[in-house]
Amino acid sequence: MPYEDIGVDRARAVLKSRFMARFAADVVRESHPGLASRITVRQTVLNGHSRALEALDR
Image 1 (cartoon, one colour):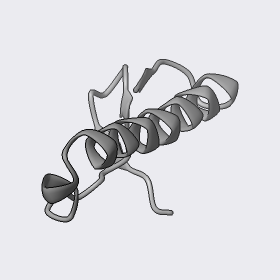
Image 2 (cartoon, helix red, strand yellow):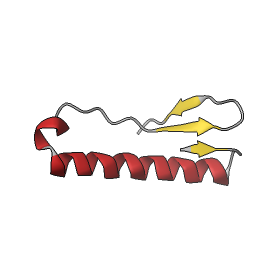
Image 3 (spheres, one colour):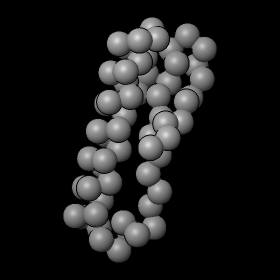
């Protein structure tokens, strides 16, 4: 999820990124159980100014 400003905007992007990663993983688990064991879930946010991709640790 992209964000422009540090603070509330970045925090919102973090929440959205975590939600979307969980949601997508759940859909894959329900629809394709054989594939679910082979996926790796990554959660990131994108700094809109520097275009730096920041990995989120759990």
